[in-house]
Each structure stands twice: as C-alpha cells, then as structure tokens.
Image 1 (cartoon, rainbow, N blue to C red):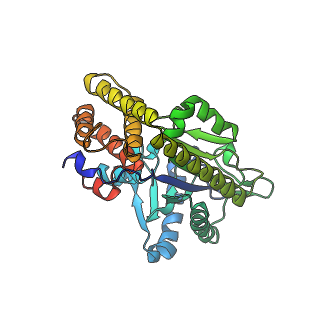
Image 2: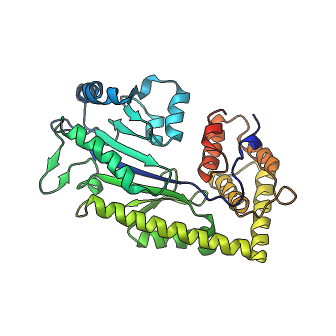
Length: 340
C-alpha cells in the first residue's frame, strides 16, 4: 500500500494532542520492582491476576503477559501509547491489564502504573477514569502509603500524589517563530518537565511533551488545573501564529522554500538523524495544514512518499516511527495506519 493513500487530513486541520495520566502505586509488603526477586514478582502478579478475574474481567478488561505476545502486537501497544519504549525493549515479567485507553501496567518502575489516555485536553476526564481504577484496587489491596509523605514510589519526584500528568503536542509554528531552545527554556521556567515525544531531551519534530514537575505538596486537582490551563494557552497561541503565517505571503513562501530544501537534502544524503527526518515531516505538515501546498505547487504527497521510502528502505522499525509521527501530526489516520 502506497504511503500517499494514508494522507487523509485536509489542509487547515490542526495537529493532534495526546494527554496521559499515570498514578504510580506500590503494594505494602512487597519490595519495589528494582529490588524484587522473581518470588516477589510472582506474588505481585498473582495478587493482580486475582483482582483482574474478580473485578476487571467482567468489565471487559484484557490481561496480557507482555513477554509472551508476538512482536507486532507489542509494537501496537507502544504506538498506541499503552506502554513506554523501555517496556517495548524489555517486556520480561511485565503485564498489562487494559480496556481501550485505560488500564494498569504492572511491574515497571513501580508495582502499578494506573493510566488513562485521551487525544484532547480533557484532563479532568482521564483523571476521573484513573482515579476510579485506583479506588477499586485500593479497596482490595493495601498500598505503600505514609501519612506524612503520601504514596511511596520508586522515584522521589513522584512521592506524594504519585501522579504524572502529561500533554504531548505539536507546536511547529511557535518553534519556528521563537526558536526551539528559547521556547523549551520558556516552558521549563513555568516549572514543567519538558522532553520530546520519545521521552528524551532535545526536541524532535517540534513535538513537546510537558508534565508536572512536582507531586509532593500539591493536590491532584491543582496538577490537573495547572496543566489544562497551560496546554489551552499553548494551543491558542499556536493557532494565532499559524493564522498570521497563512496571511503573511513572504513568510509562507519562506516556509515553502525551507520544506523544499530540507526534503531535497534528505533525498540526496545518505547520513541523517531522527531529528533531520522528523523536523522535515514537521514543517511539511505545518505547510500542508496551513494550506500553503496545493496539488499544483509545492512538495506533493507522492514526493514525500518517495523521500520517506528512500529513508526507511528495508528498516521496518524506522518506517513505523515515521508513520507514527505522521499519525500524531494527524496527516494520516490511525485506522489506516493499522493496515500497513
């Protein structure tokens, strides 16, 4: 199937947002995962499996032992944001209990990571979803908890609420206007942890992943409200810059020339980085979404397909990375991506 078949978004549509909440919990009397022997891991598994059979299986949740499933199914969990990259690379003795985009990842950084995901800024809803799962588990299992410090976790920065609330968003217009370094520093000055969509330092494809920096001394509602307000302001700001870009002919032409130049460099060179690839896809997507490219001018879909096919060649992993970031940009649809 040709890549051009996947480009389903129309010019003018906006990039997708991915918001995720994780509640880190540990069970009283069992060593943290980095200290637990196989006997303790088996105990953890059995306790959660019993809970699953009693309460979650009737609610249509699925139980998966991640190191026993085919690689392509594990890949799908990663690209759906249900598991992190570290679990994709090492699924041994790790389990996933889930229904749709909510569930529990078992025996990763903490005994339990209760999560919910949405493709919007509806942070209150995903907090409510995760909190319901948390309450059900806590009624049947004693958590490691301190009256003074709150929930006890493997990492000190999560002690307290145990909450990690994050928003991943594509902000190419703001990145080009202010510069990546300056924009990242501005976000960090707002007291958020800022990484890229792969969970690493350094921006790739102008995709920013920001999350709460503190979990102790704040309430869950404070974290939710602060990130929702910050994310909404960023989204509004990005839209304003894009609108001004579309109305400014010299700047539109400058963006078009930049995309053509970067595309030509990728096609002609044999040495390039992830950042080179995804920065090109990012600015191409921005130009496409702003309506700067039309069927009669600019870099056409078939040319982007040719560039990407040359880049990934027989590397199926790189191909999936490229398609996944395009899906995040909403240049392609997730449903069609599953057919690749």
